Length: 260
Image (cartoon, rainbow, N blue to C red):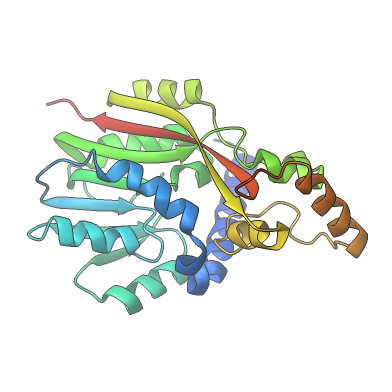
């Protein structure tokens, strides 16, 4: 990896960590879409687990649920954003092992976990191959990873309303994710691509749902005029459905396993 690429990734990670740290205090109140998408994973989890990692744990919502579900397990929460981990500690205490770190360079020994849970975190990692290699390394033989991530086309209505393609998250497509998994030697037990659509009463609520969870990084220093906002609102209103203004999340749900 060149120094230029490395510096670019470090800068990106710093921006992501900063954005999510700032969002941490209000994250839980605004993360409706993220919670509903996470429920997709819940029904597929194994009956038993003993060493569990919540990769990209945020404020600890899922880590705490995992601790309740697997009451005899050691639960670890990993997140890149210090502000998220601070909120997690305040809300859920120290019975869960909160660890700072990057999903692509995890601070754990080989074969540390028999279950990894990760809801809407992988899309923030610029190197999907490194993430999958790390999952293979930290999983025990026979261990599983249950993951939701986002695919290209997510937030397409937002990009259309603002006429800014950069509003779309830059995520690897499904074929690239599958290729990275194959190279890591993990096995795909199940994969499902779906479109999860959520509805909001107005543009203000749409933008709060995105910015409020730290998920809007593009052009953060751009000054928007009242005319810009009015124009975006007019475009978004053309997309309105009976339930409200739609926002689409293109999701990839994965169940992976490390062979014995």
